[in-house]
Length: 276
Image 1 (cartoon, rainbow, N blue to C red):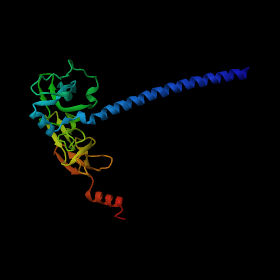
Image 2: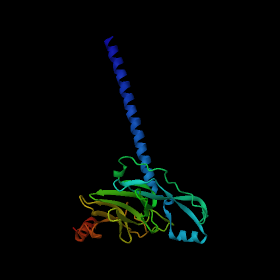
Image 3: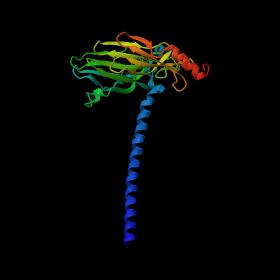
Image 4: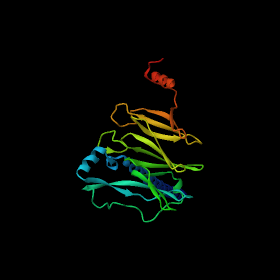
């Protein structure tokens, strides 16, 4: 009798543990799928259709007095609480068919109210398919555009320092890949806007792509990784093309090598076996 009770107890315990394990498995699977969906959405901003049309395509459309893309405003993001300074990312929408340039521009999608999560000011990142940013002061109602030229980007970063806020954008401005679209497949430069100086700096090297960047500890200076286009196809491919590192001095606006050139040469010779 006792053996039968123990057996029943063990069966019930196994059933409970099995149920709990199944619940954890389902929850974990849902969380994993959610992360994959989010990563896919972010990476999908690199698709051709999210870019702006190349200068060549624009010239052709202008001759026809037509357009294929229209501007669209995103929800304002609070950047500076004390000065009530917002940024408004300017996106673009692809029309289903061409329309006359002189037609009504009715593609605005701006929000009727400013919505901000309490801690979103410090999140430091906004994602989308953008080609400009509006700097908006809610106190006096003034607004200015950040870029005067045609650019494309999908990521806006903000960094907070003592008495300074920097906005960083990796943007493409030329169709270097020659696919008819200016998007993230093309070479990018790093644009750094200072809210204290109301000034923007452009950091880039001709024929190279700004692949990544990182602030040096307790400093406004950066380490920037530049992608080298080895096959000269106008696109940096991270899987089989190398990067070099440069230090950017924010105050002086200068790029300098981080790795000594002799060390770089020695490392390459060691790798290829020409130096033993």
